[in-house]
Image (cartoon, rainbow, N blue to C red; front, side):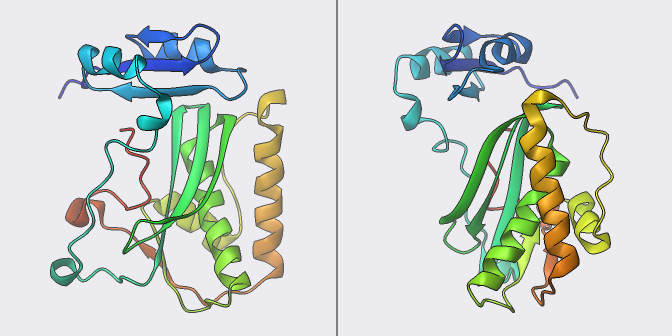
Length: 208
């Protein structure tokens, strides 16, 4: 199946505008502090969004629907985590939300020259550390990344991400996360989110 065409809006970047490829968008946001951008499914939607404030679009559209808890049997009282990376490597960020309400509990990034697996791993560890600090020792955490779950379980990150001056902070965060895992215990169940059966995880950024 052919990949759907996307159009990219850069509100804040080297050259704000509407672009037809990710490469053009990336060239205008990489190494630009506070860059604001988003993809849209049609050219007309992108043009209209460009005329508007980015804050009316970033994190507002393409929000995943709330799961049907009664039907699917999802644990309502839980935390869901996810990451987004526009490119590999690319601009990466991660966050955690309450599964039932989708209220955002934490968000970190954006970080340059990251990738999705690293973001998913950092989101899981951040969630574990936060729940432990809050005394929520039994609250489950959902992730849709088997890779990140494996890294947390084995306390070891196996990534091909190349270290650059732009992503030094990401590598520092990974080291901190690994140190936390090796020096702390946790009881929170880490559960695999069933994307096929339930739809996108509630913490999804809506950028696919």
